[in-house]
Length: 330
Ligand code: SF4
Image (tube, rainbow, N blue to C red):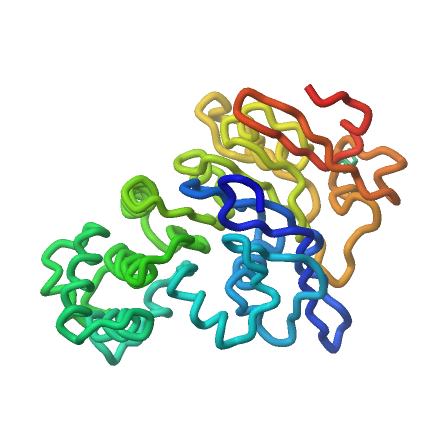
């Protein structure tokens, strides 16, 4: 395990065997999440981000299965664990939150009841101590009046408060890694900013590592230290957020950034990337982005692009593209 790395995903492949054929949802995903960092996994829907998150916690839905790769967490190979061992790791050491907190909370129990059950399941605490711990995590995630929140049913809380409760549940057993899958997408803009501030605060105060899965480059720019840009189940560009967003090299990343609204392009039509993300049933040969790429060359159509690594003052910058195949690492 590399120094300072908490999670290492190496050449991960996930496939769904369906009646229509084999859907290749994740195709060689490779990235690290370092201790105490926020790593953003960004891309359009259908690029394998969420399936990667679910693979890490051992919850790839049927009929999906991991067909190749390794997932190392704190030096341990998660893919060698059985379900009982994964249950211990899930929640206790790795927690996951999703876009819609109301769907994840049980409407018939108070949130206090739900968090206490999680705490007692993972930690050997009395009912009283679990109650005290619940109140202290509610406080840590900025929920006002923790006693009132404890006694509330999910429907009595706003969307932002429900997401704070979900984060509290995720952290209640002392998780070291939080996988947050589109945690702000269902929230309005001001609440989104508050939840992002909270995640950044928890990273500082609890030394939490976060894998943030999002389609939103604005969210990445706001809080991620490093980012991997995913396309068709693989990462095509990765590096420090500063570098990837300001000195991007991959044509797909260029397209994503050009498609963002900008005050400097006021009055001009929004740009878009022609075509759509390929479905996992019919992945293009060679570079999977080639049917949409404005710089496509002959070799892109049938040769997988190499991973080219550049050195920057902010760390390594990795790009998978034939355009850079002959460039010396700088
Ligand atoms: Fe475009 Fe070729 Fe680079 Fe793929 S490898 S992004 S098709 S230039």
